[in-house]
Length: 346
Ligand SMILES: *[C@@H]1O[C@H](CO)[C@@H](O)[C@H](O)[C@H]1NC(C)=O
Image (cartoon, rainbow, N blue to C red; front, side, top):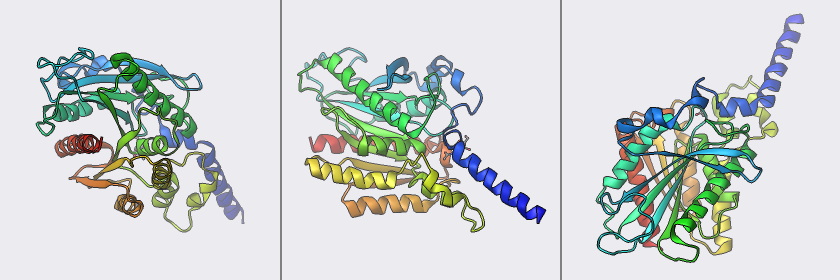
C-alpha cells in the first residue's frame, strides 16, 4: 500500500516536472556548459575554410536582443568581390539574385561550433559549377534564439517565433540597405534551413510568421526533422505503463511541422502565392527521430501538392548529419536545387 502510494507519488512528481520544465528539457541552451561563451574567433580561419563570419545583432519584436553570425559568399566563386556592394561584376553584369539562407539550429550548443560544418557546405555551394547564371551572392544568417549563445532572454516556442521573424526582418532591411528601396534587381531569394527542433521553428515561420511581403520563403531545408513534440513524446515513451505521452495537452511547445505543412499549403493557395519547396535531409542512423517521421512528412507534402525532395545522409546520427562528408555534399546540393527552382520560377 505504502509502496504503491509512493510509486504513484513518484509518477505524479515526474509528470509535473516534465510539464513545468518542458522549456528546459526541450531547448538546453547551456549544454554543453561553455555554449554561451563560445566565440566566432575560436573557429575562424582554416576550420571554417577561410570563410569569414561576422557577429551581428538584432532585436525581436518584444525587444529581446539576439546574436547572429553572418557571412556572404559569391555565387559562383570568383564572380564578384565579397562585400563589394550592389556594383556589377567585371563584365558589367548586374547580379540577378541575392540568396539568403536563414539558419535555425538544433536544441543544444550554440552557433560558433556549427560554423565549420556550415562553412564547408557554403564552400561547396560557392565552388559548384551547377549555377552558371549571372553572378549572385549568398548571405548566410545563423540566428541564435533567445537564451542561446549571447542572445538575451529565455527560450520558449512563442519567443522563438519572434526570433525567427526578427531574422527575416533583418534580412529584408539588409537587402534594402544594400540595393536601395525600390530597386527590383537583384531579387532576394529566401531559403530557411532548420536543424532538428529548428525545423519546427522554420515551419512555424513559414506557416504563421509575419514575413516581409517582399521576402517570401522560396524553400525550406529540414535537417533531421520530426513531426511534432507530441509525436516525439510517443516515440520516446512508447511504453503503455508510462504516462508521459498522455501529457501532450499540457505542452506549451508544439514545434509541429506536420500541421505547419498544411497551414503553409492553405495560406499559399488562399493568397495565390507560390508554394515553397521542401528538401528533407535525414540521417540514416538517426537515434532520436525514427524514419517514419520523415516518411509521414514526405507523404504529407505529396498529399498537399507541396514540392518535396528527400535525401538520406549515409551513416550519420541525429546531431551530426552535416558533420559527415556526404552530409555536406547533400546539404550543398539541397541549397543548389532550391536556388535553381526559385530562379526557374521567378
Ligand atoms: C538535445 O540535446 C541533447 C544534448 O546534446 C541531445 O542528447 C539530444 O539528443 C537533443 N535532442 C534533440 C531532439 O535533438
